[in-house]
Length: 381
Image 1: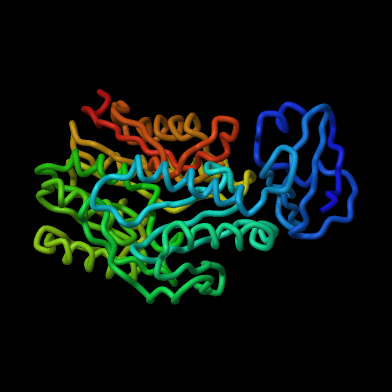
Image 2: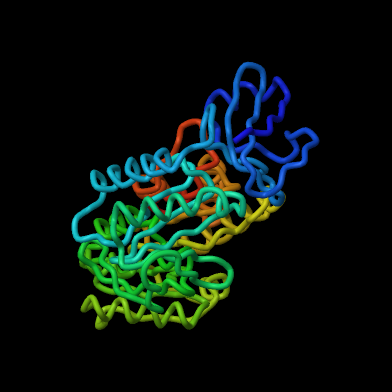
């Protein structure tokens, strides 16, 4: 197959040579490419081969240096990813990320395991056309799952085997969670927070805990498993709160848990109880770079309200999944939050994604999740 070749500005040679997997639309010269076309990009002496998309800021996602990857090449990348998961996953866990797009050298595509079923999701129409069929075939051969389905705007579309059920129960470190593969967040669960949930478990013994933006109660279940005396879960979604109650109950912790349906930004100002541990895990607060400053103001306000609910000596475990907010900017927002709350605080732990979400050093954009634990000290006198 003859590849179309586009020559980029010489200034992009270093990025292309480094292996960065994205080329933005404004960097392409005039062309006649269509979504799903393979293209060779050249900048100076560097070159790479990728898949074109007609829409979105990212015009080309790069997969190789010199040639279109074969079915064997895709299968080898899938096997590399599966081998990594076998080394890194904790015991008694059958829900995790199998493929993390760029981090597994398969940009624009993720795949998650939920027991005997796999759910794939693409962030590129071109990748869906040109790459997804080969990846699904490789996953089917390697894992022999009961079914593989594509999650898109319309729900789940079966690609292999039988369709997944509307929901199923999976395990994470022996704890049980209901996963809604058809309508749940992400592909069903927030798998990227698994290690951060474990950190909360380690810190929760004997604590009274407030879990804000609780979704299906992941942090709540882990805190209760860690010996929390009491956990209150707050989320604006009644359906999410019902799922949190179900997950708490099926793990045997219902008597130490209370669920509240409320908007967190409205709940905190009128709630005056203090806690030993407050967890804050909001949804992304910005989708575009232009929204970054507003997101930082919202993080400062939210965490200031949360810090006011932590007793002196207690802990705030807080997260940001906003890709447009860097780890440094998130720390600055937390510093501003402490100033507004009138407390001294110190960071005692920082983390990001679970290890089944690997990051490439040449692709800092891949790190979207920030997680920090702060100790809250006596108010500033």
